[in-house]
Length: 220
Ligand code: DC
Image 1 (cartoon, helix red, strand yellow):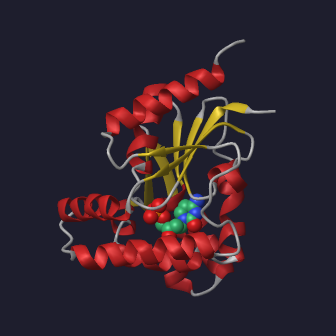
Image 2 (tube, rainbow, N blue to C red):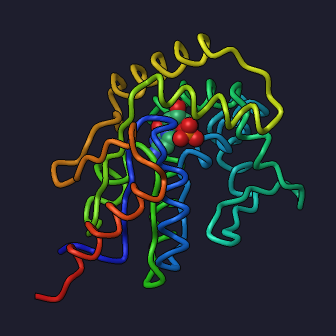
Image 3 (tube, protein in one colour):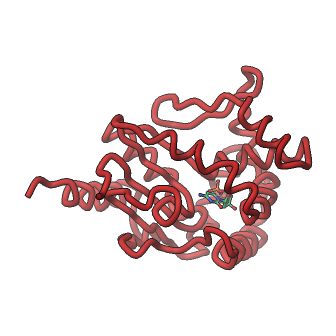
């Protein structure tokens, strides 16, 4: 039985998932699950403890709040969300997310966010593993160069200096690692719809996905 209160958006990094998920959550007044941010938060905890049991406890002690259709992470009342967006955390999250312990430690936290309120879940395995019954599943892709340029602008706006060539290489390497891992690899669910955002504005992507969602939830 399909759950129309859940929309999943999976795809490689910087394909536009984050902006799309946020815009959809706002438009439909749904809660947003930014699962990449949870993997980053878990990696941040693991860096401090080097142990999965301790990392899980540290993770559960963080405050993860949804404010204005966005996810924020607080540690002892300090907002650490922007620290978690750092490329170094992204690298360790990419490695740790390949481990069963990490994924097992995060799955129930993610599933518990589903409710009648509605959920937009953004990640790599939202439609395949975490919410296989989601009523609308989108697989969002974009060319690596386009994604590197988006990430470059994001990091530049956040005051982080990066080299474009290094970013393209990093994105390709991370894509390969996300696709090749044994557990929950990045791949489209059988019942997902692929949208390529390379030549589309965020507004155009939003309109396409809203149309798909409305079609899926239309009363027969
Ligand atoms: O989307 P992001 O760049 O914030 O994700 C950080 C890392 O976490 C990335 O390497 C992929 C991993 N990840 C994952 O394995 N599964 C998810 N559902 C979300 C992210």
